[in-house]
Amino acid sequence: MESIKIIQGNAISELRQFKSDTVDLIIADPPYNLGKDYGNNHDLKGFDEYLEFSFSWLQEAHRILKPTGTIYVFMGVRFISYLYDILDRKLGLYFNSWLTWHYTQGMGRKKGFSPRHDDILMFNKSENFKFRLDHIRVPQKYFRKRNNMSGANPGDVWSFSHVHYSNPERENHPTQKPEALIERMVLASSDEGDYVVDPFAGSGTTLRVCQQLQRKCDGIEINPEYIFLIKNRLNKNFEGFDSIDPRMERVPRDLPEKIGTGNLF
View 1 (cartoon, rainbow, N blue to C red):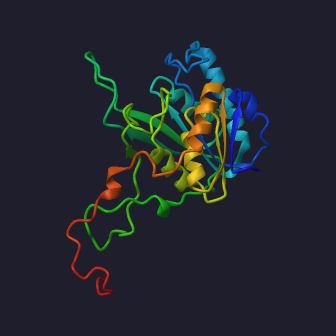
View 2 (cartoon, one colour):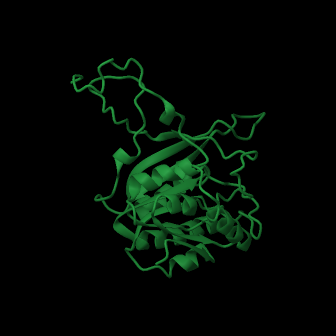
């Protein structure tokens, strides 16, 4: 299997071609059914039609995951509770976390509060799943002997800025996700050489991240224009991910002078 593979086609049809119990990690950013224009198709289905679509691709995702596998699913507020129900009750996956991606930039509203977050569901196929906490720890804010000074658990609220339209890393895609956001998922729930699948590749962020983190990754995308975009993106020189958790740059306050001398503890 080549390391990074782009598959043009319908997500449900293509997922049906995958062997069962073969995938370590699925990261999925499906259409939110909000009417966004994705070039050759619009993200707008009837309510029941969208739920049927969601169940169909999630059923295939569940089938292809290894028993130790994990799935992350992005979703907007209107349908996320329905996706939770599908994953939990209908498919019998194990709920792990309801993650909140907080961002500082977003559309403004004059009536009601401006949205500043997306939700991400994290489910495991069994109770025996991979989670590499040491790969995603963030620096402590304060020094305390009881703290793990290799870093803290990032928690379930993640702050990453949008890839702004003025950012040179911005692709021509309406819902491009920050690379560091996907990096955390990949590092937490897979190891080098593991097999990752993105059923809705979009701008190719998951493929790009896996390319840099030495994971095998298949991305499915229905729009040929985005296939072209992804190929160009994968061929670009890598100069670092396009975003960062601001906590990664902090240094613990009140560090004792003797830290690192062996006399601290």
